Image (tube, rainbow, N blue to C red):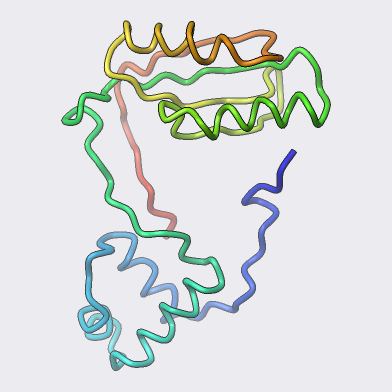
Length: 162
């Protein structure tokens, strides 16, 4: 199985100012360097250097817009638990490659317990989920068992780590 984020270690030491920058950027990535600098009481140049260092080291992986699933017609969330028929590198690699290619799959975790993977899928409707399940997920070689759990309501959903 490929390396996961859990095994990654930051190659930089982060101080209080770095964490302040990260917290502000998690809340609003559109803040300018000047705005961030003013909020953390540092001048723009060292603030910019800190951000660039954290980008280069991988602490900041990417910048993204968080979309409202319902307003773009993707309001159905399904957690699909999956067990593979075989537990070897080749079977795992085939499965992982497929998950990385499916646009409906927004998260995929290798888990312990009764199932091997938990996949978070977004769809527009039960019909579109069924179509994905039968025609795409169902065609992935090596899947043994699946269990779909339909999310009725989202109580908390955040991208913030700090």
